[in-house]
Length: 433
Ligand SMILES: Cc1cc2nc3c(=O)[nH]c(=O)nc-3n(C[C@H](O)[C@H](O)[C@H](O)COP(=O)(O)OP(=O)(O)OC[C@H]3O[C@@H](n4cnc5c(N)ncnc54)[C@H](O)[C@@H]3O)c2cc1C
Image 1 (tube, rainbow, N blue to C red):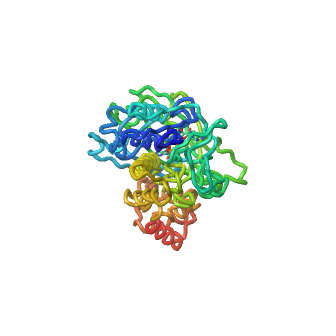
Image 2 (cartoon, rainbow, N blue to C red; image 1 turned 90 degrees about the vertical axis):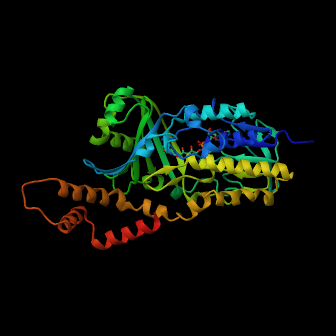
Image 3 (cartoon, rainbow, N blue to C red; image 1 turned 45 degrees about the vertical axis):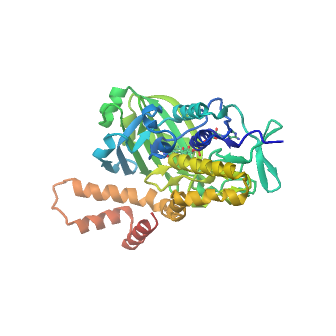
């Protein structure tokens, strides 16, 4: 008897939707399964969608997709308990179509993408929490849900960071994510009148601002960064914390989020805004969080489920990689359909595509990023050092001016930072980031 479908995709996030759209466009009979009541309802993301991977399947998607604002300014900075040092990037090119990035809210974008998949001919079914992959020896032959098996020669696993379908299977032999490669993301959405929002952030209609902060001032040893993104009539505010750094310190993650929001710099941006949504989600990022393989007999793994989140402290990019890897998996599945074989040897095409599309190089070549990103000094000593240095440079207290090298030494002393450590961390930063 033949299979039920040419391909089954599990998870209607960015990776799964992109894969399903491409498969349907390529003439495949594809089933996209989502456990949420609607695609997008289970998804949470801080929300800057970088790049144009979607162009491959949906030309000018940003004109039709319910994006929030196109980004015109990106800010990066350090917070101490009571000060903030930041750098902005603004580029005139960011203000015009096709734009470099957009802020998005996933409940809207993912529902729209799933609808596009349906329009292209995919069968999309929500409220289906797939129980497991249907393993026949070393081969995956579809999925099992509610005691029933649905079969396809190829199954694309796109079920997100805490990938239940792959954990504890040959794809990811460990039954749990590795603590050291896992982050906790928390996000709140606040409603704010668009004209107040645009005044407050100095942006025009439709324009967006994004900021990411290395957050000092948390209890010693706790490492994390905050973000704030402008949407149409809301602000997305949140924290991404190193999970391991929370263990055994007697701190609650939501207290840290409160602390971030109460920082004078952040509190001013939230003034008068009303909380409308909140959530938390794990992030499995970087090379250390990769599965045992990206493909095998009858299966491929894409997006967060495969650990494809690039997060280096300056930026977090996962949605772009989710779309790109979903598309490469779909292209591989279409080639397998044409060849009439979905063996591991045939699906090895997926790895070759991930290489050519700069996905594997981006993660493999920056495998040591975490060593720099999770250097505890970036969350304690360096925010204090930066604040002290810029204070000394900008403030005038009536005393004689000092040369820059003296100010540097003074800031080092105030932050407890030796020259040797500064040089060593600087070398690591340049080499590994
Ligand atoms: C707080 C936070 C901020 C972030 N900020 C950014 C950012 O600014 N820019 C950026 O690019 N990335 C960001 N990311 C990362 C980004 O959200 C992810 O990389 C992206 O969502 C990955 O898409 P995905 O499709 O692989 O997985 P997901 O979006 O997680 O989608 C997986 C889907 O699978 C479904 N599913 C799971 N299990 C099953 C099952 N058993 N059966 C059926 N369906 C199932 C889920 O309901 C979900 O819809 C952020 C993440 C967080 C948590």
